[in-house]
Image 1 (cartoon, helix red, strand yellow):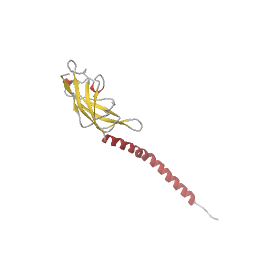
Image 2 (cartoon, one colour):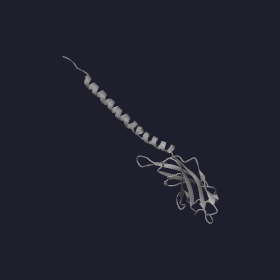
Image 3 (cartoon, rainbow, N blue to C red):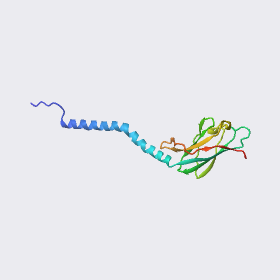
Image 4 (cartoon, rainbow, N blue to C red):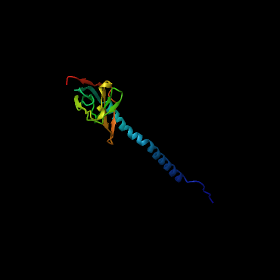
Length: 165
């Protein structure tokens, strides 16, 4: 009489294969999203590096009665790239910082953009508190349609007052 104890070789092999497959599925569940998202992050990072928006001038005209009620004219130069949007960051003279909603970027080398002071980053700018500095940043849409903002341009424009207007 033979006394068989333990598992047969076939059952042991099947269990090892199933355990290996389960391990692969568990590891992929943790690593897969990171690998998948890295490609998109790299694409947007490359687009940011290949895009340069530069504020060249910022002028407030006709500041006679109330310096908070005037519309600035901001010249933004598209040096290179093709951003989906841009945002404007304004550093007020008192140190307060305001950021615009995404705006349509320039499509050519030099485009004049008039910004409304009734809302947005130029709201309640008071020149009695000092100069105003403006910077711009490119914004791209990812695969899901989410807006991804690049770093601001290192170039800033200091707003001036046009007393001739």
